Length: 206
Image (tube, rainbow, N blue to C red; front, side, top):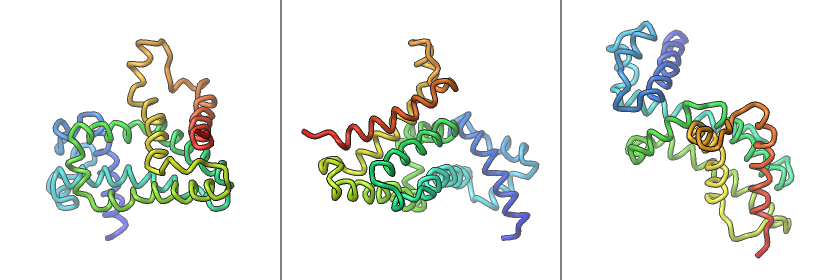
């Protein structure tokens, strides 16, 4: 692939991400994406094959971004408790600054993950999120710091649920409780809270 073609595809994916996030899979218009990227519908299909192919490429792109964030954390160089907190905070920081990602995940849940399941890339790469946590938890259990009856999938669920909630439920939460969860003055305490919650869970003894 030439550098020009690579840039063109990246531009298309950036615009397509915004279009799908704003209008969902059914509502997104390929003509609109082509117009905003100064390309043609024919060229777009040449690169991605179909509307679904483009949508899958967008999903793969946004999931790859959060996986890169996780891989950049050198967990093996950190004590297990610090590593776990760092993963939790990094996930929170990513999710609360990538609204399109949360919207796309919500849209794909509406479709019962029917598109995501067709992407071997997403299914393969997202397994690394669990192996990363498994490594940290195993070290924490071995050191006598963590309990051994909570698995990595549950920890991932806790972290993701907290981080996603801030974006997915931002407006309803603000309407009901008059609090904007993404207000700048709350971010430091909310970042600390997710680390505290996960560590408290993993160090709690029954």
